[in-house]
Image (cartoon, rainbow over all chains, first blue to last red):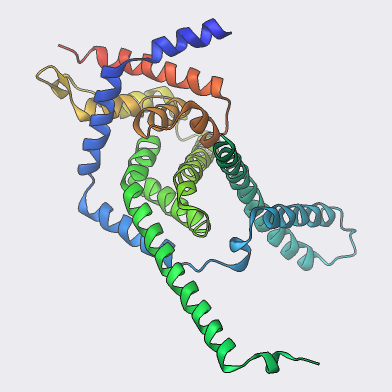
Length: 126
Length: 206
């Protein structure tokens, strides 16, 4: 296994190719047309204008708790008995789906955030 | 009994106002820092998404979603923004690939049901998109377009591994986190990408 990864590392070590590829990619940035640049600029300003909501300002542990609660509610609603009217059920399903999607995205980001915090801790201890 | 109104003396009012002003200043500083960060990565992100999708509008949409996704973390330390940004970007690109596969299947099925024409062979389409020409060789140096085309021809994961490791300079560990896969997979994807690029560009060497 180790030998395999060493061989693959040696095979992937091609400084000339890497240098050429990086130069090509850097050059390609200058070829981005004015319309696209302007669009990127507008998009950046639009993204920054978006207000950060309270839940987005929560810390890691609060996020974890909120995500767990929402998932629990989502699972519970999945078992809701049939007495709920169809319309209510449909709207709940929509909201649920949106929440679930946001939660999943948040959980994926959380994984990265926890890892970054871990790295920082390790660096601080070291 | 002391109530809030008793505590709200002119001096506490001053401190509250001062705290609020400090919060506003910090908020403006973070806004500016995020603006500066996004401006520094937006073109690179667009190029990555453009290579992955080969479609300007789709690439722009991916970058926009990534910016909005990162904006949630404006309060997080600035050194976390870059890995977070690329992690969100890679997820958006992967989502695009997934949607694209589903869309292609639906279109192929609809065409098949209509019986108008045979579904397009994906290999033919890929060959048609490849535009490497011998003219792209410039006095012994590989042209930008030849290299970008070679990158476009790589499978999605190899593209991502190559650009994150090689171009963005992330470590194997960081790339693995960003792409949500093992370090071993990153080494394999990267090695295959280099091998494939070398093979594709061999034809353009003098």
